[in-house]
Structure formats: C-alpha cells, structure tokens
Amino acid sequence: MEALAIIQTTPHQWQSTHLTTQLTATLIQRHYARRSVRVTANVRRLREPVRLAQCMFRCFTAASLAFAFGCDPGYRMKPVAWKEERSTQHWSHNFEAFSIRTRSLGRLVGEWWLRPTFEVFGNSERVILKAAYLETATGRYMGVVDPRGASAPPGGGSLSVDWDFGREHPAVNVLGTQPAIVLDLDAGSRPYTVRIDYEQTSCC
Image 1: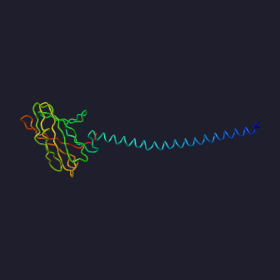
Image 2 (image 1 turned 120 degrees about the vertical axis):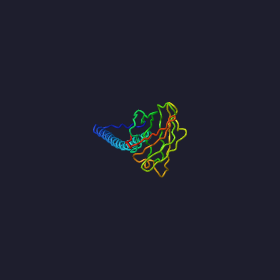
Image 3 (image 1 turned 180 degrees about the vertical axis):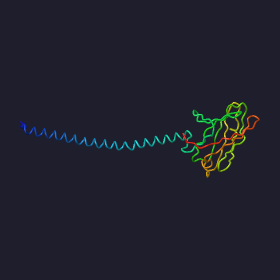
C-alpha cells in the first residue's frame, strides 16, 4: 500500500497563509481601481472633442438654414415705405389699379445676378411688364423680362425680371446701399411707372 502523506498545518502557519491571501486580494483590488480611474479619465478626454464637434455641427446647421431661408449675413435690402408681411416674409404696396407684393433682395453674397419677382394682386385688368430698370450709384441697368413672367391676368399673377452683371461685377457691389427698381407697366390700356426704392437692413 502506498503511504498517505498527511499535511498538518499549525495555527501559526494558517494565520500567515490567511494574511498573505488578504494582502494579495487587496493589491489586486487597488490595481483594478487605478485602471478604472485611468479609463474614466480617458473617456472624459475623449468626450471633449466629441462635444466640440457637436457644437460645430449645430453652428454649421444654423448657418445653412439661414442661407436656405434667404438670409445673407450683413447684406439684405428691403423696399422703403412698403408694408411688411411678417407671416410670409414679403413686402406689399397698394397702387391705383393693383397691388404688388415682393421679397427683400437677399441671397446675393458671391453672386453676380439679380432675379426678383413681383406678385400682382387686386387687379381687375391684365397687368403687363413692358420694361424694368435697376438704378444704382454705379449706373442704370436694363433688365431682361422673361415672356413667361411678363403678364399677370385679372385677379393676380407673378412678374419676373433678370439682371446679369457678369462674374467680374458682384451683385453686392453693383447694388450698393440704396438701389431702386423701376417697372414700366400697363394695366389694361393705362400705363404705370412703379419705382421701388430699397435700403440696406439687418438680416433675420
């Protein structure tokens, strides 16, 4: 028969082994606690660039929406002495035989053209746009009237005109601060000249 070796432990040896086990457990706990602190610090450092990126994205989105709704920072022209319609962001004015509604001149930064539209309403006779002129401090410019937007039937319609100044002449430089648009119109058989003076105003 094989001899069985019986290991006996004295109270002193058992206490020493127990203390060693407790010390090992404490060291392991402290090690993982330090690692947890470092991981938390790293996560905080990673969150800062993420927050910055989110802030930049919000600013870019706000600027994009501003441009999308026709707002150029620092450059916008509104009709002088016309009634503002805040709900539709239009300006309107009543004349003898008709009324006209239009928007402010904006979205021009970086452009060399101008394409305003004029909504005629309250007219009992057809209104025809014969010619249009832009008067500024740099000169008088004749507009190109699109035949498709040159007539408003009784009850109302839209009139449109185009100006192309060329790439070497930015629209903001041509318009200046106090431009005017002159419309030569016929309402039925009666001629009318409508002058719309503009002034620079703050945007949005």
